[in-house]
Length: 332
Image (tube, rainbow, N blue to C red):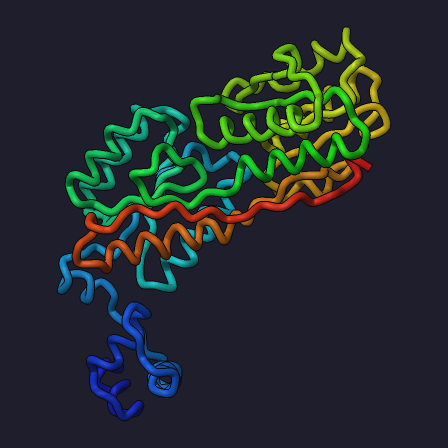
């Protein structure tokens, strides 16, 4: 089995230079890095990240806690996390919270016992005392998709702006009564999307009505019934903005089942651009989040914090990744 010394010999550099080139955390000039990588490839050298981690007092493991992997946005996010972590020598230990704060706290404790080097959360609640406790223990944390407050590093999308633009698109097409199908306002993403919806109506002189603000959750699966019950007796709404694609899909099914047509009678826009959105009939107009890239960025932020000697001195940064409207047949 080849060692780092063999790589250094072929590349014509020191073993410390090989370590720097492979870590990706310390600048190495391009020519030197190429020689090192060529030597690694030639020897089929596999860095021993576990030994490196033990030497540095690390586990080289990251804890990823998300609400529910069955939620269609999380596989792409998790894949972005895992691929990027692996390429940087980290493993990912994954746990579902099932949108339950007690489960989330239990997952944190379990992962702490496994000595993870840091956490990535799509947190289940605004009750974040357990996340503050991690900071007190100097354990790095990055929030993903769902932000809770500005004292944490986070990767989110431009929920307000993207929702505003989606509703504006419907208004620009002449629609006058636009419903919203939303989730829990205790979650930042739904609150921001709701505010974007309201602001678009306000800016274009359209009255806001609580009657056509429908709150649904994936947990109780009631979106279909809520939408169907309303449209069974009301035919005045001409547009629907759903704050995720799953809600939009349920809305389209309910609208069809009461004898209305999408988009002829009612236009529907979703949010996320999950894979099935382009396979529906009609294909779903939606706000596309760069989910894989958000997972990738969350890991990069976390690894940077892990590698900094002083993890708590810098002001937390919230990276806002832009989402954009994808026009398909559900609004044409």
